[in-house]
Length: 483
Image 1: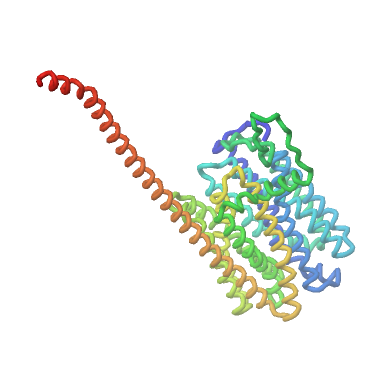
Image 2: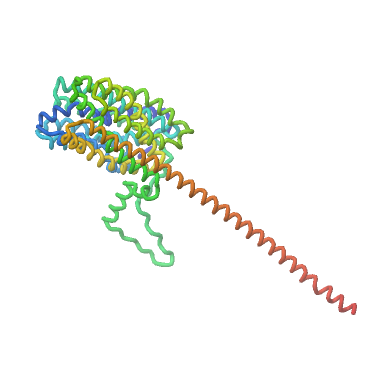
């Protein structure tokens, strides 16, 4: 950021937190209501479940996959400009999508352009909160994630009302105007003074010159420069040296394959089994409404210093509970059962939502967080692109929504178990290395003490020899004289 106007943990940090909350409500909350438009889009474009599922998958993939580009823009222009640009793109994509004549046009406009804009706004807000808060960062992340709960609560109700009164094209036009509020939130992100060491301008350090030889300027090709820049902005250096980051990346990406499926297929599942459209949309709102109250409480708990070392295990436990909860939908499609499912699901979703970025901030340094988030986002984008069409294909083949929830549970449970075991093995390896270092240090100190004592004894013997050498001629002379 060009100029330091605000201090971290200051008063303006709470304004930035409010801006981040609203931005997350607008961006990450919107995909939760796509299932409401699912039936109308399928009917208007005469498409199958698999074809229609590409719309939420492209949007979700772009929201996550645009992370590296967002990280580069944040490094170059700052969070404020990037968030404003994201609001403009998100609004433009939704407005242009109202003129779509085919699903392909909808994929490009509402899927690609809007998804990229939401990515810029969302990741800028997350990075800004991490920079503005240091001491209360876990609590700030939890409070900011309330925006997702607000979005999940309000977007389905608003989308259902707009769809009923204006149709899906009119609804998308209104949503495009709503996304312009991201520009207002971006204007609140003043530059902040941080303790982060400024990064070097050269990504790869140049070799030192030999003072005995004439200076020679090393030449780097354009391809080598591009490769070095890509490796830096995708955090390949962290991936190579940080085992905890590797475990997080693999486990969380695998988990993303199953995480968005209930948000997309819960409403069609309920409507397929006779639940009214209004009450089916209300199910998603119940999940978001419960999270509004649960996330601050959970944020206060995970923000305690005594639990700081266990946050990654709590994250894995929340994902495991989320996967097990999805099995409730396979038991029955009765509205009371689905209501109980939403209440239990909101508990596990609360833990996963407040910890997914906090764990990443704990694993990597904050100055490398945008690059690490970029790599994580692009992998999540690939997972989000594959997951809904895969579930849609499974639905077309079986015509049974239960298999979709089975698939979601399988991904979530296996990903949670992998992360839990991986984090434990990584921590055990760290302790082993620490013990080895301490043992080597003790051995080195013992050797130094032995060497010091040996040198001291040698010095003592040498001084005694010198003294005897100085005294030796005089007794001999005396003895000869006496003879």
